[in-house]
Image (cartoon, rainbow, N blue to C red; front, side):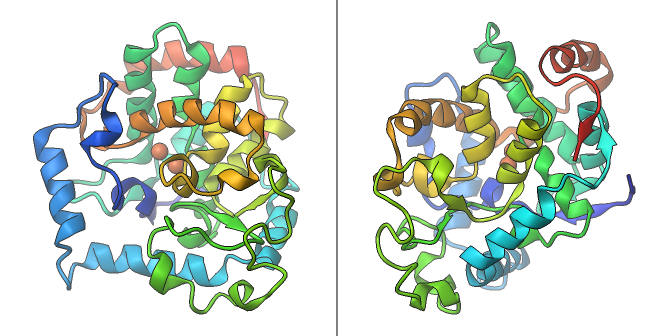
Length: 301
Ligand SMILES: [Fe+2]
Ligand SMILES: [Fe+2]
């Protein structure tokens, strides 16, 4: 496995026009007033020359232009051969430690901290749900694709369904899809497009990114996480669904049942970058035991 520093910006974790403290109502999680205020300022009054905003917009512009049915099919073919290497979950965590989110204004906090912070936050709230704690730790491991040269718009950011009409709640929906050829293809641009109503999300093609890739890695390697955990991994960036409330016409009963778990997970994935940095050495043995229970040994990536 190649090592090197790759800077990565995950728009889905920093640009969230529709998130506010309401999202956390009924939960124990309260983002600090400073976090809420900073976020609100950024969303409501984005400075026109803000380089971070420009990068986010650019990432979404590329994603919304190039993620088509054909593109996603190609990506499945390319990445689902699992011929990139064989290594453990811990090794993959160390690997994403070389991937730094350059959108962080303070310092470069490596992605591994986001992994442990998300997991530790879940552990506080759900100490009895080992599988969910582990899900928090590993949910972003699909970002290793960035270190293997996959462009950011094909790794990070909110996901959507290709092959049918794009939903209104997608970020930059109005402006950023104008050059996507699928939107002018009558086979792909109707409400259900190439799908049957309520066919189930497992039967639709998501835009390509770290959620779907890591889900596939886990299935390929006979992971023992329960369905709830697999849904959290596969759809945590599917904001137009779990937060925007779109695409319900494609969901089946199973998806609707799982939606509450994806939403439950989502509150721990946000904002956690501003927590104190966890002591990774102290935490490792506990998490290694969880890995050994659910995803032991070496995985094919
Ligand atoms: Fe993610
Ligand atoms: Fe995350």
